[in-house]
Length: 514
Image 1: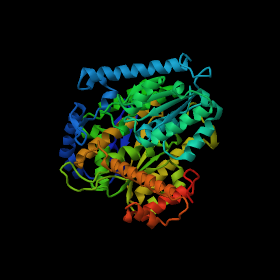
Image 2 (image 1 turned 120 degrees about the horizontal axis):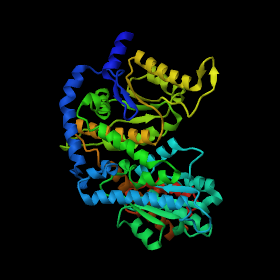
Image 3 (image 1 turned 30 degrees about the vertical axis):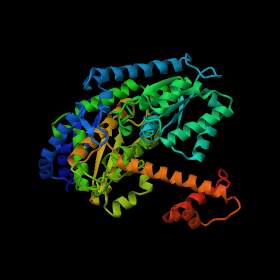
Image 4 (image 1 turned 45 degrees about the vertical axis):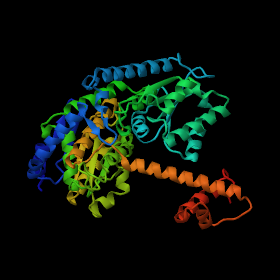
């Protein structure tokens, strides 16, 4: 393709959204006009499916739930006045609590004010808040924030040792819709122990974000925690960032949550358009369909050319892979759908896996994210008339053109700057694209049966460990092989997993196993 042809293709397909400060360039994707014409019917159906979802239709039939994360930034669009009032009340409660915390009206047990936030959650209760926190962190943050997002004992120790004596001035957020999420519960219990060792009352430093009536809600209420904020059944974890799950830690850190919600709301408005060429979320979904054949045949690589966006790919892994990775379609057919997502940041990846992207197996498509503003204020020159930011931009274009030259597909999202409003818009853009794509391939984007299956299997492993340890304690002077333990427990086929369970037990001093 000649440079003039590339320029004409760029002009023809560029989706510009001035009110968002965002553009989507799909000209380096190898689709044809025939593809767009053929997909216009399916994408029009996707618009109607999205309308039904936003109107309160049951979008998660497995659990008979509506899906209402869009209402969080536009409460007036919710299907009932009651929900609208609940959303508005929750937002006001967040702002009141944060103001009282920052002004020291709410203060810790033995310190003058709260200076840190420790957020305990996993999956959607951690990935979004971590991404936004890292992207918008600055020396002017009102409170420092750290996260416990696993059930790794060494991970607990690393975070708690980093907090050290500041534990006395740390506000703890415990985030779990059901209140029964094992990883979150374990993190909370270990933090409770840390407060006890420091002779501090955990309840005077704790806040819950959970479902009304959950075990966590009941505990927080009975123990007199500082506050409880709602998680509604109609908000899924991976789309909960515009609820208290994301807004409370953001606001405590000092991030402008009003601007964040405005960005998401503005993007929602634009991506409701049924003019496909002017709808960036629809175009994203169509490009995913084109690149993967509608069957996940290629991986999605996210390459933001900005350090502040390096966690975006981790956030998108859950949003996209948990939403689209499904065994069955809506008709019950086995389809094994999904798109694998990975990435880090430019130019780091040019010194890592771009070599394979250009010359290796062509099993991917790239989404570049370009940020126009380098920094606040002027940059010094590092070469004759050239700044570090100029080099960053040149590396981006060089990589994009090198991939195109090698017939590797890419598209580019450009935003003016990284701020609360632009991040709200980016997140809303991908939320909508996921919904559109799910409609195109006829799957349910709003349930996660595979995750639930993994939790059930983990519970069975824990029970097997308990039974094995009981057997060993009853026979303290006898040695067993893994097979003998399995036979004794009536689990003849479980020798392998029992071997691994007991290998782990023997590597730690907790259970007195050798």
